Image (cartoon, rainbow, N blue to C red; front, top):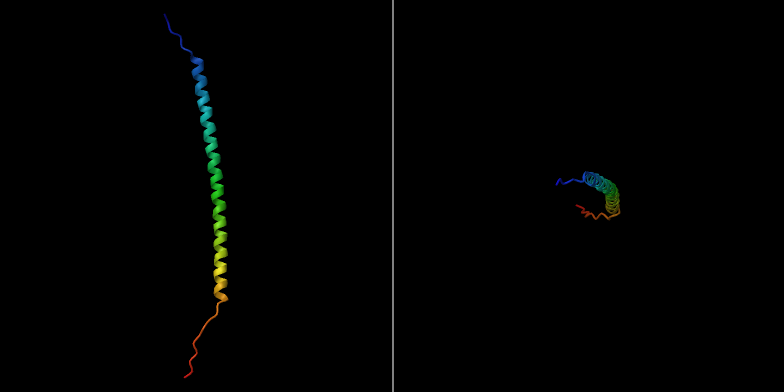
Amino acid sequence: MKIQRQIFPRKNERGMATLVFIALLAIMLLLVAANGKSLFQLHREIKLLEQQQIKQLNAAQTNSVVLTNLESK
């Protein structure tokens, strides 16, 4: 008695696995792109906060009172 193989289901399974893999890869690429965009925006925000802090520190030094000791000889 000869055993017959079913060839067609295996080809369909391979094709489905390929499609699932490509779909997961696409999702991962979208997540990487979104994270890159978020990191770029976060970097810009931190840069802006740093500039504001530097401005505040410079303004605080400008408004400070300078005490001098005047001695006459």
